[in-house]
Length: 371
Image: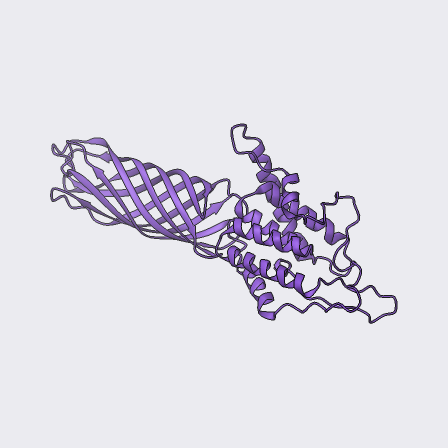
């Protein structure tokens, strides 16, 4: 979105008699603001949102152009600071409503209003948890974005934007336009920010995958590759540059066996508590590592099966550990495609089984949904 671009183009408008010249900082001030702005871009692109907040705030303090508030709001939102981002988006809209020459487009307004709705829901959820972390107040957000010599204005106060400020004194050096590369860099960074990347703190993640599982049982017991399916859900918790996804996972694979010259089918069901670590490679792509601990349930074995020592019918429960890696691609704001090229599960078997351990290797693909 081009609103993420801080417009560092200073112009003097004298085309009509009585026209008011656009405000422009002097060259030294513009240089400082541009330097802070570019450092904020670099931090933002490297997913260092706390640093981006600091640099964008310094740029605003050097030159209080309202478009900088949008940059600060974006970084707060990506960092999971619901209240600060909510305040800043609202403040930005208030300012833009008073600007006739630089009004928001319908698409831009719709996007910001969507952010505001998501952040409002996020803030309500945080406040509803008595033992949860307290969301910073809007007042503290205001303090992070105001210049020392430009105190915060109340929402109803008149807004003085750079476009309506008095012209620079006569004889001052006109500010230089920002390099095209800097503007394109910010525009590209904003376009690269996916509508499907986590925009606000995700409250719940769910996924469904399917593929194939290959089994290896000790003791010479043969088990062929079978279809495998899994459902999972988690609660993501931001920890620095990593998102920890704490939840649970259930898996299912059919297990065919021969008993009395007839092929029958048992089921292998896994139920595990899981912890996933998600690292965002870029705006669209993330890598994920998972570890799960729980039980593996072998059900449906009939009399005459070759999987138990006495060939008797039975059901068995085994402890189970599983680890895996996956790649995630954001398709929409809520939908994520996932490819898990390798997952390995290990279970020590019950004494009655004909094998002493069971190893499972699976390859899965699927979809995830974030709320």
